[in-house]
Image (tube, rainbow, N blue to C red; front, top):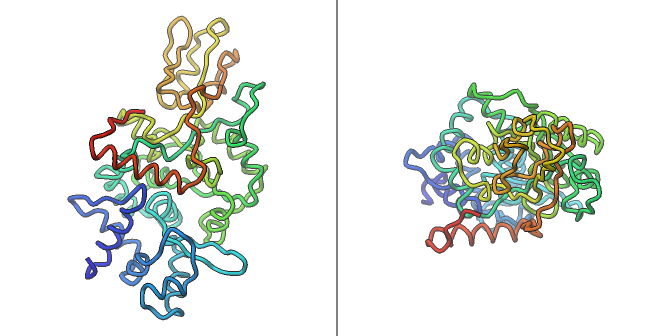
Length: 361
């Protein structure tokens, strides 16, 4: 394994909660060879998920500190490791394939890399994302669609969370960009992928995304909503990133809409749509608007709450205001930290692979 740094790196990346499994075709190794040099692949295996200075990584790798500092700085600028600055120090930590290497390649992806990503998604990654039955993303509607008299916990208030961020960036959506490069794209807005805080600083410093104000970010959200995109962030109480997902290109949503997989393995629905049957005229606008086909028309619209994402898009389409978006009574609260979520995903994968958990949410 040590003789092949790319095989070693693949094994290293596969230890993350959402891993990087091997395939029969070896497409995952072709991806790594495209992204990393041999020297970079060897260096990446000495990083940890905890940010640290270059000298600590150099000591583990047996590489002189100045050389390791140069390698890590270059890798961080290429989107191969994460970089954060604290108290005048530059710290580095490992990046998983997703959220990480995949998203950070949005500025450099071309048709060849897009084809590799697409092949790997079909061969292994769709299954890997949902392998634990622990959703890695949560869905949040914009505030205008939520029942007006609801008093929300802070982690449910999307617009206020965006406004509270100290730094905000917006970048192109890697999923839609990949699809467009392969001639399969949609017409939804491209520049919709948001990051906050330290993640935003990384995107801005690397030129992956551009800095926006809170007002600009909220308007991007509303434009995405008007376009029919689902707002989904990491399934934690703290908002570190926010995707605006389409059902045709999104890595998580495609599994639900195109493969018929259970939403719970991918997305945590914190809200649900509730229809006032007396006010509903049966126009069908909500059914047309629903990105996952969770609404059927009978005498009035009927929502399958098991399928409903709670995204609020249906409420925005209802001229009669007959749909309320309410927090679920049986809500699964987001995790307190990314680390807690990661441990839960690892435990979920272990249970299911041991045959102890049938899954299905």
